[in-house]
Image (cartoon, rainbow, N blue to C red):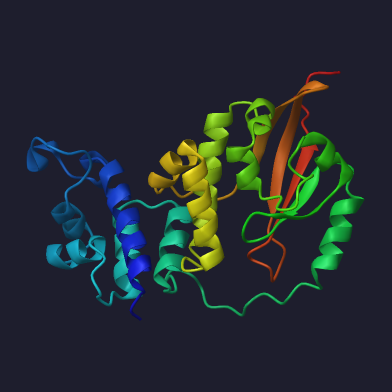
Length: 270
């Protein structure tokens, strides 16, 4: 399967950035073999060697050439470059190949509908919200609206718009830069399912134009799985609030995320 030109360029940029971040020691290459480096990271020839690929063939992949590469070759590439599970999933989504390491299985059954999910969100006592493929809030409860001042009041309600284009988010989210950087990496992981989606492209273009921080983080081509963990917010009325975030993907709806913020046991008493 040959990929569209824009998708090949995106794949090449992703691989090039991951290569630049690798050190020789990370992949078992000895310094005596690699010598002094003029640029950071591994050379293309070194990546080709450790994954059993022709240097010319690997160079063509990074250059976005119109060539066909097998799923097995991409699997060797992911193994050789020490991809995380999120990076590996993004690679295979981007290349529209099935990861040979995944066991065969039937797709998940469709969920019973967005209405049931929305009802579940409203029934929760902790802040909770439902995101679609463009990270727009499609359902949320009153505690979420009360926590995220300014986000859930507008028409678009895109989480990325709020984080990068609304000054209130920088005041609310403790350690904003690290959280925002990770958010972009998580969003990039999601875009691998539909990299040529015009709505996704329009969202990314708008954010790159409107936020220098988003443009910088997007240019890193970092990919991370959306995970839970400690979250702290500096609420304008209550001060610091501490939560543990839990993110779930409803069965049959891979483009939907249910995010819950459970009160943290480590939170200081009010």
